[in-house]
Image: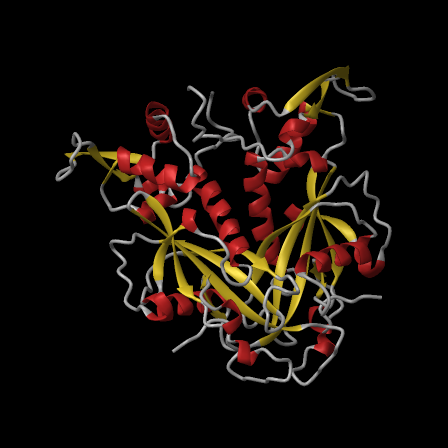
Length: 242
Length: 242
């Protein structure tokens, strides 16, 4: 009969072939927004088998690390960035996902404001790549990117997390362009604004844009009381009357 | 300089102490609903160090398995169930989470209709335990359960997944009791009904409950066109007028 988490199998010297001892890695999907496009940080893979193909930022877990600290280390080593938010999305474990052997990888995603977070390193052609112009990444990174993009699309409809991608003050035009880029769709301007105001995520700064070629728009910032855990759809709130 | 996913470290014979080779496990949080309570499937831990404490259903990954197939195997071995839905939630990797050594575990959650899924096995005191009466589970299983419960609470507000927990035909009274049990809150009956109908998740079967001690309520089923991917909050839909 199966027993769970068998202790006797776990001493470092035990080599029980019934259980997998796997290398573990993290892969970081770092999204940014510039030139009205959603972008992702990529580097050239340094594996011969993936020569000239792009890959996400990742590395193997070390003995003294948990997954989260490995993600922050990778980000720091690869970009020089240390103060960005990372969220775990999914763990990928297909038997053939790594050409060198069994590696189980956990994907994290992050949103960074490209202008405020200048990359401090540039090895392996590290660069911001438009998400819409991607295909044939190394490893299973197409699938990992797609999974993180889907999570991002869900999250922006429920939480005001996109503030990470925008300057502190922004116009509704910029905000809509960001949502359109992430969701890869065009939206009706009037509906977008109505719906956004219904959610009460924004504060009108009573300032206008400057240095723009179009008619200056009003500037807004995110309402910080909502930045932690507001859900757009508090459908089941028991207090509120419809 | 760090390189990602170093191929040369990955041959099975390579024992590079810079990288962790970890045991990997899955833990399954199987939720059910009965007697107006949310329940979870637990067994007695078989580790001496956790004697008499409850634990989730889990096991170590085998060399020929990915995480998903290991989860289904655990569920089948432990309960006899094979046709339930499992969804990956989160991977836990704290250095001290397992007393026997480094084990990284991925949590899955599932919803099953207790009446339709009679347990076919009963070793290690396998049983349905009320979620509200739990504390001090073995390992980090309190945290794993809590994380899965939070995911469940989010998901039921956006997707009609609770159909997995209910009989095919149910009353609004049963549906509200289920939401109240999962969200651990009381709701206003009138608001709950209004909001549920707004979401268009239900089909009125034009039948009444039988064999109930209260006034028979109308019976409903979930609208199957929504069971796959409807979101309650299509806030950013570009077509719809407010």
